Length: 569
Image (tube, rainbow, N blue to C red; front, side, top):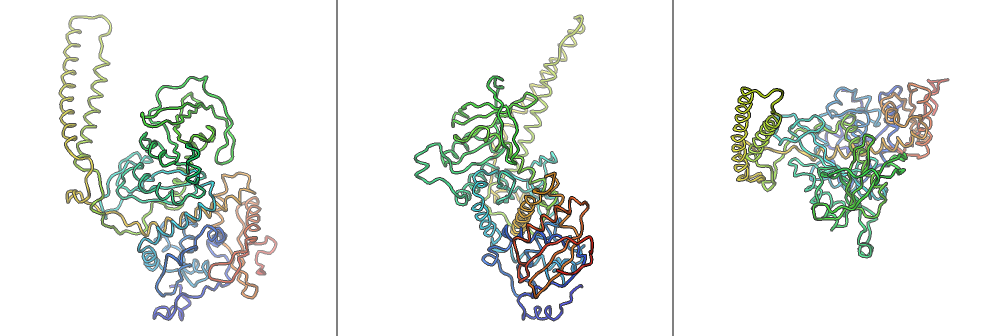
């Protein structure tokens, strides 16, 4: 339904057409027409770069660039899943791509499946990551590492349970480990169906990849001359706290920043000095900071930087970066919230946790997982220890008050003796459970799991492709945010304004003779928003970008209030 180019569709169905010609038609009031304003940013951020190298599709009606552009448009217009395309007019979306209509969901899913075969998305993502880092070497010198727990509510497989901090529950989920810049811009991610923990993923997968990708690393000669020089800096939360890890990373000449898990007593107030610190956003704030050298875990000498909060508490930071000023170290550590903000924004607006396909895959038999028997014993130990803790607190709180009468003393002694006996029995049970837990291996391979505990992992190929396109869309939106903030009074409103632009109606006015495709956006909610939009139009027009697959140069404009029906380009 909605298809008008029947001859080309017939030719494609019998294998005589390898991609229909993109041809824009004049159209007014096209829904989501404002998303075309993002085309230059998407192309600059690499949406179609290296796609011919890594991807291919069999002959058909839709060309590969149109599929990538459509998926990026869907992300920017907040269509959080492929299925949501069912509830939008295919012909209207087709106008945005220069087609009679966009593919139906079943066809789009099939093309995504073909594009995601043989590890192609990972190779493409790595190529883009290399390009992004080379374009911004300063952003790649300080990297944030964190895991994002993606909850799974389906019935296809019984995934292991993970603690989900935002819901304060243990739920079936997988974990994605993300690598971001200081401003929250994403570089790449690694998906783990069986989560071995941040430390293991960091050492075995993330660091080897970063050692190849991060540009402008010191040469071996420079590292030899200065024993305290480092290649780049990694920042992570308390989950990655490990003196042994800090020691090993120091040996690889990689600086690490993390929170101190066992900070100990507060430092004297006299050690703190108020410093002016420039944050990653450019804002300058005052912080009360102090610094000492600390030998952590009897393994590695680190810098310990503490920040005193307004309430009088102290936040302790450990760093193996021995050159950077402590103010910059504090700013880098506290800017870690940019990654948390990125996760929240991507969940709310880009459907980061949504499934792309519903397939499952076998897990290699050699993968190590937590032994279910050990987990059961460990749960029993924790519950028993909690009961003993409450009993001990009750025992310690018992005391005689007021006049000491013989009857009261006798009752008190009986009650306390009974409580002490209960604690002794519980302690014996706890010791027995600990012995049983100790006799069981904590980790076993997948092949050793009982049949009723076996599980399959969710398919990740298609999700990696879609997540990479979402990264590009987020980067494109961020690039437009920088332009919009030059004009808008409140910087926090920039993304809200761009969302309004992407969902706004627009007129499409192609002129084949002049080689121009004019995109005229309708007026926004306020005069201030219109002025910001005109500034954005001027910036985009200077780029002189052409729509992919055509010779039409994109020209952006705002519908004239004097003559909104004027069709001249």
